[in-house]
Image (tube, rainbow over all chains, first blue to last red; front, side, top):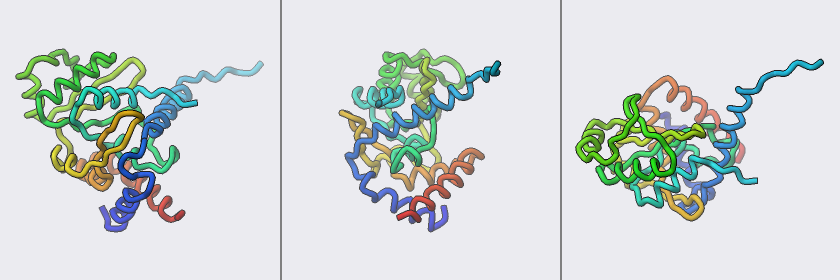
Length: 50
Length: 172
C-alpha cells in the first residue's frame, strides 16, 4: 500500500464513528438491504406497455 | 424502517455462543464506513476464527442451529462433532462456508493472507451490534491482507476503495 493510502486508512480508523464500542448494526442492515435491492433488480422482468 | 439482516443475526449468534473470532475481509472493512454510501454491497461476512477445535465446533453448531448449511471444499460439511476432522481443517487452514436460504453467507476462515489469528486479534477493534460485541480487524491490516492476497478482485477492490477513501478524506 502506498504511504498516502495508509495514512488515510489510519485517519479513518481514528474518526469518531469508529470509536471502540460504536454500534455498527446499521452497516450490516444497510449492505443487506442494498444486496436484496440489486438481487431484485436482476430478477425484474420488463413488462411491455400496451 | 430498519431491515432485518441475516448477516447481522449470524454475527450476533456467533457472539452469543461465545465463539472467538475477528471480522475480516470486505465485511470487516465496511465496519469503518461513515455511512451507507461508503459501504460495499456484499452478501458475505468473513469471520476469522481462533484456531482451536472448540471455536470451530461452537461456530459450526451455532450457525447450523440457526438454519445455515455448511460446506467445505465444495461439499456439504456434516462432521461438526468430529474432533479429528475439525483439527485437520484447522491444520490445513481451510475455510468452511455457511449459507442460508436467504442467500446470506458466512465464510469461516482458518487462515488469512499475511496475518495469523493472533496478529489480527491482538489489536482488533470492538464494536457493538445492538446488545452484542464483535471484534473487527484493524482497517490497515484488513487492507494489507487484501493486498497480500493479490487476487484480481482484491486488486480491483483496493483500487476502488482507495479512490473512495481519498475522495472522502478530501471532503473534510
